[in-house]
Amino acid sequence: MITANMTSAQDNSRASAAVLACQNCGTTGGYIEEIWTDDGGKPLLCEDCAGEVRRLEKLADELAAAPSCQQRQQILNTVETTTELVNRLRAHDMVPCVACASARTSAALDPHAN
Image (tube, rainbow, N blue to C red; front, side, top):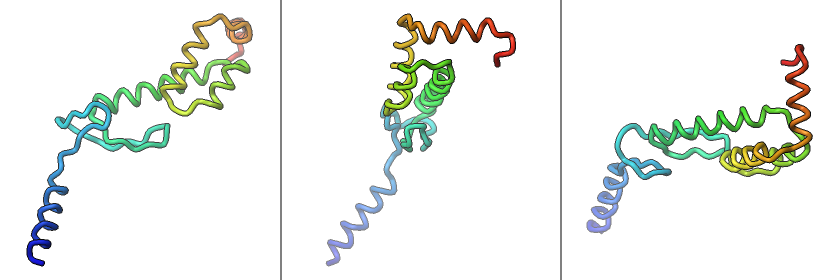
């Protein structure tokens, strides 16, 4: 019984002494923080990776706010991650889309559009 208690105590001390590591890049140096993401996760990230997540989420918000056609709306409704959203909206915007081009032209010509 004494051995079991010692082993349990050793396991507890190892767990409490565990070094936090970024769940994206694995770094253990610097500040590691737990952040909420738009995807609903709460990963432990270093400052660089947390900054990249925030930058990507801001870009996703900007892309999603652009005038939308039926295909863009379908992308917005079906993607599962922020990265997928950014990649698919960028890909859509690279291909000439008549509906999106029309909406952009109308917005540019309308002096009252916000």
